[in-house]
Length: 211
Image (cartoon, rainbow, N blue to C red; front, top):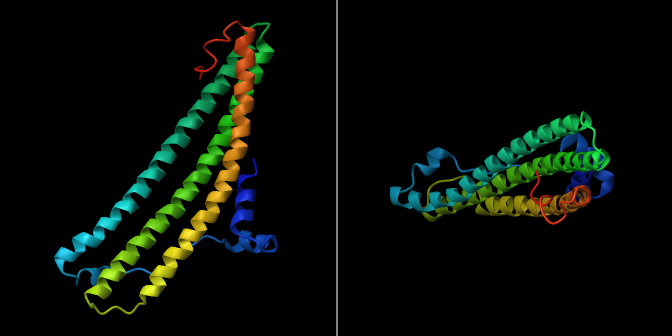
């Protein structure tokens, strides 16, 4: 799969800017933040309200951890499947060709799955940045509401949220395109899997649940 190429095309259009994007990157950044010492000057009761926005940040962090666990599990499944391939080669079976085709297709699918999960992890990074941008905006609004001296413009925080949000949406288009490619690899694996289990007489069971 050409996941990184697809995503760069989505992220850094026009295509004439592709080389520049490769050299300097084109991802969003969190430029505007509210200093902690400024937050400390807020009335204690009001701080509780704004920090409820932190829940979104926590959710985004948890999502990243979940994707990392899935990547690790998929890598383990790849190694397990490769061992099955080596074991199958040592056995004499008239269905060996079909079995190897199934297992090879599974490895291809799982390896592309890891690449896609890594892309999802990158998306989670940007979603986390968006959550943080929203959190900073909430803090900035509260600081302004309580007339705390703060050398910043609320509009800058709003534009930051908008900019990161738009980037996330563009990135998601690349993720969707990559997911469509992954589905093709999955279908190839399932077709090879069905062919093998049908050949050995287990067409009505087994092949859906085999791992």
